[in-house]
Image (cartoon, rainbow, N blue to C red; front, top):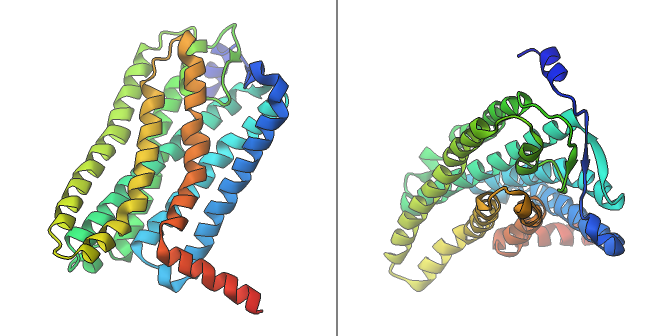
Length: 314
């Protein structure tokens, strides 16, 4: 469909995002809380990327994937949070229709990339623990680069299909979204078209890019735990488990927040619940991931201390 045909069918040119309109009396507190979370998320993830990029000790596939994950978290946060802060400060705000669609595409794509990166990281940990003798030959620079590139390209490509389907829907009359950003469920609520096709498409994409990676992660960790339990010494078991504990915590947060959010039915009376739950994967997970990977990783702590000592020494 040509762009002119699409825009002729679409009568809604602006959407009003309500935000937390019912909490105006604590607007300043909520705004400050979200602003601090945003700045902490960007700072934490950029610090991790800087440490991994500049520390030769951290130039391994595991940290390469953590660096990609931090970049993905920055993309998600930057796509959602600035406009969310604008909406919170003004007790609601207008966004153009195509701006809303663009925000949904970029946010959903980055979220998909995160899930795929977590699956790739599970495969990396599986190779390192279950096949240590072949790890360096299999997970070489070419392999790790291809796996990371595949995750990024797949995430942003697949979401194009969903975005095109949304653009073919009719949006007439109502233009108010009771949400903090442009998410799929409230967008579909505004459409005057039959959304059954796009709901089937969402189900397929969710199965392919969420449930399948999650199952592969589960299978990888079953094999990992089985291998760890066969290690004869307690110290050996603890060392092996410590290399994947941070990743396991990230998987639990990501999968838990996404599954909880998207298994809540998108009926009008449940959209408020979805609005609150969506903060789990747009605010909480990007904020906590840097903490998980820094505080639970001794090598990163050592590199950070080295740089702090170097700066003080100068």
